[in-house]
Length: 83
View 1 (cartoon, rainbow, N blue to C red):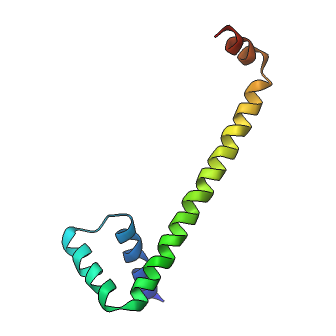
View 2 (cartoon, rainbow, N blue to C red; view 1 turned 135 degrees about the vertical axis):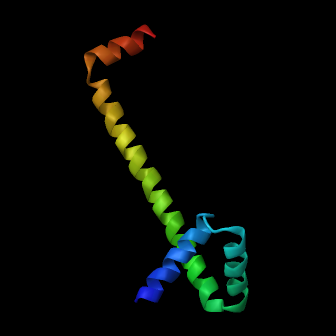
């Protein structure tokens, strides 16, 4: 279990560009030599993409909620009309 967590951490560091140049080269060599590692990297890359997409949707939802609250504030609406 511990080695799996270390592998996930290493893949995250690679995907986030946080490895040193030397570490990155060693990791990329392992990608070329071990198809299982390459598949895990692709799976984790997909997970990163989905997390970012969800975060953007959640941020939009929160901004829309704030916008709706502001539209119900007479002072805000008045200020916007003045502008």
